[in-house]
Image: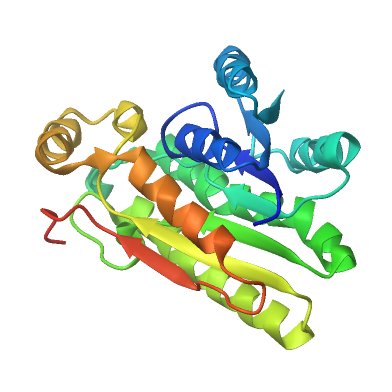
Length: 246
């Protein structure tokens, strides 16, 4: 397997951090971005201490210009972008009646626009290279919605639709660019920290405490998709904890 340049958004914790560390161990060059610069610095340092290659940038996925700056930094440092992981996401679940309008807006901005802006930042570069791989982090909530998850599920259904359409566009264009959707279930990350509704936090927290699996399990799915030969594309991976029903 050749070393690839991998850009990861939301890389300061959880799935993004796990992907950065695992893929660096596999010999890939890592470009990490998130809003928490100090945390990124720590992760990048730990990767380099183990002999890996990694750079980090403070960036917000809701700012299209900052996403372009991330792609430019990857090109400046490593000369190309092989994989872009649209991982950043929020999950402040609540029932619609609670009127958490600001949280609705933020989820749309991060979970949907963030994917679009990340894709915008790398797609033309990958087309020029005649190869590349965009991995979008969806969710089981992009397949089934439940009370309290309406807006979050809507954003993840959107990511699923975007991924499918983009895959078809790139296949039709014979661009060599692959699209993969990873749809995890309950994963042990900081997502619960974004929940402000007490009732939702209690029920979701209880479910995660008894069910959630490590973020590394998701990172292994990303590694699997990346490692496939260029003529084969893993369209979607749904990863649930063995104990998760829905």
